[in-house]
Image 1 (cartoon, rainbow, N blue to C red):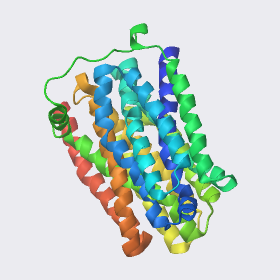
Image 2: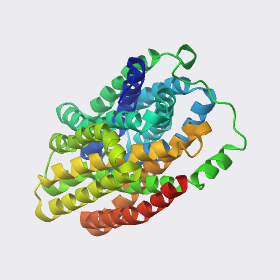
Image 3: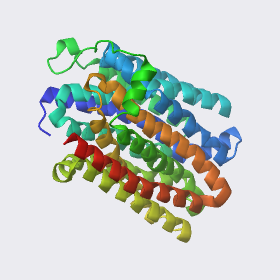
Length: 399
């Protein structure tokens, strides 16, 4: 990735902001049993904490992306990162499950735009020719936080408490805010761009025009990606505790491999794209997701935790190849509204993850984890076939 030192600074700083936002949600997964025990609820009921963050996190991404287009990306990032820190500290002191859920909803609302606005800002800074590789690195750093936070969250939960874990990640959000203030504002840099002019039409009309327009296949693939990859990952902590008898720290350490492979995938996605094109990158990512589902089915059948290492790594690698590629492609849907375009990808992915967590809980209650893995595998195969065909048609039309 041939970037100037200033461009790299932007990518790494915004990557750290994204890392904190991803970590803020996913460290909760291995801590769910402890949260449920402390608040006197069933572990399956406590999964609503994941959904409470992911749904607003996904739904409000287009809104935040549009605000970034209109008022300037860094200005919006300052506000939402500060809100992320405040909301996380509120979670640390919530006395009941309903109040914790309310605090998670608030946190998800503020955190919603961090990734979408950061992606658009990176696209502004590096230019279209290096956008895919730069966004891949940005997202690799971001979702390294998703994986590493699982281990750290589990360790802090076991050594101290889940409340201490929330407080620690709130402190990380304050560090991200401090680093963000050190970035030059667009008017001070020749690389960045300022606020975009107002666009014609209302927000929902413009969003629908993009989402259901020529590039609609990209946004639909984003939805199913969230349902499968994030939905499955959200259950791994509880699954490993119930099926393999692992504690929060043990389950979290296994899930950390997700983050490691996110970082690996983010660094190699540019090379795969250069060799096979965006469709090839997404194909490799979806096949990696199928490998993860098979590994989890083996864990269910045998009770051995070792295949979960492959599952966590394959999920991370597959996700980080798929999501940033969709983001990069989406920016061509409307170059004048890249914040809205990337926000719509976030809507599909993260709202899909929230839906996946909710539906997954019902599937587990009805048919156990076998039902969850089977449903995820079927959906991923359908995405592989139908999504691949739609993306191929889009590529032919673009050429």
